[in-house]
Length: 117
Image (cartoon, rainbow, N blue to C red; front, side):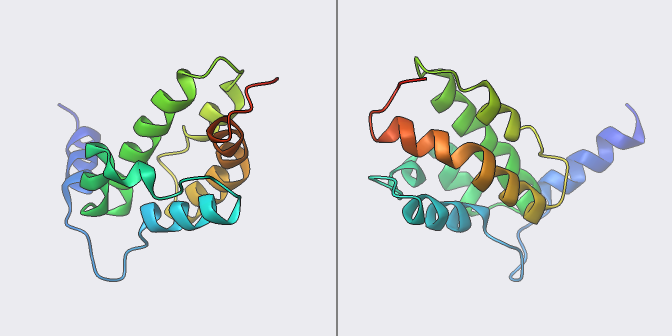
């Protein structure tokens, strides 16, 4: 295996630090501000409960996995929103901005029952 794989594994398994941003909390707040009917509901999923204990790099991966499945199950076109979830190798703040601008509007629309194009 290459050094890159080992570096990625170390980065993802590193413990969460006290000063790490919690992307789950930030996204939950953004969902509430955007008018999601149940902004805390997603936090009970096993991937997200694991994310709450994880460093931001692993949080990005787990959060993206969760929301890709959610968006992929919608009858509406969610390709653009799912694309925003692919920025998992960047800085957590960049990921959060992309998530809020690119995915949350579609997530909230679906959660409200609006599946029109």
